[in-house]
Amino acid sequence: MLSRSNTTGKLFPLVFNKLKVIPNEPFAPSFQALFSTHIVGEKPILVRDFVHSALYDRNHGYFSQRSGAVGVLERSIKFNQLEGRKAYMKQLDKIYKQSGIAWFTPVELFKPWYAQGIAEAIMRTTNLSVPLKIFEIGGGSGTCAKGIMDYIMLNAPPRVYNSMTYTSVEISPALAEIQRQTVGEVRSHLSKFKVEHRDAMDRSGWGDGEQQPCWVIMLEVLDNLPHDLIYSENQVSPWMEVWVEKHLDREKSQTKLML
Image (cartoon, rainbow, N blue to C red; front, side, top):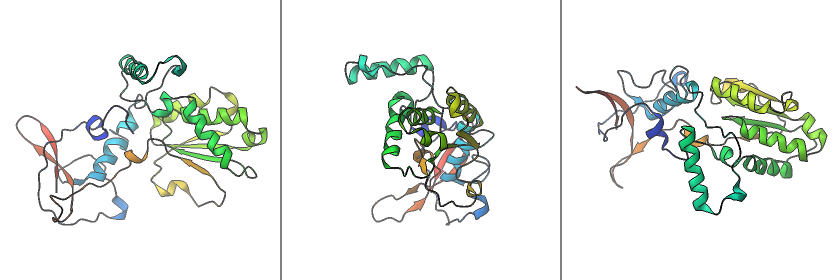
């Protein structure tokens, strides 16, 4: 997802040292507690717990607390004025230095074309006999939502735009508000757009299943989902599950990986 930084290295406010290999018994967390409520306490936690807590915890998670978690360009890049890749990279470097933002998503850097490309693909393949329903998980600044709705408003039959719904599922309260502001730049979009401030991985938030076809958009999401980490010393050694533990020394508190 990140265009300029490695997720674990850039976002987590903890320090990783070399792997500390410790034999560990298999552990199966209860269904009710798939994720930890803190990053690392007195007991080791699974990597999936660490990732979820560091990114999405309501009290200290990166996306939950930072209003500038995702960069927003004030104006689109004028690609027709750039003479090739070198000029683009120079422009990109300038944008990052001036903004002070950790990263910009592709849909932001290539707006409005990126979102319009998605919208065009939707219009070519969707069933226009039923109302168009779009869900976006992790909508960032709302640039994708606005770009898609702009395109449909200008290029689709009026009945398609007038009957469509666009739902953004966003865990960050700050980003949810930014999305409302971005999409609200076109007043007619507001009656068709809503933000549900919740965790998309919580199945209870989705309610009962529906038979009506819909589109689900997840940009820059898969690489930010909680995941496990496994390790094998060589091709014949058994696979081991990696845990994260807190390590205290005289200088500072550190976080280490253990097996």
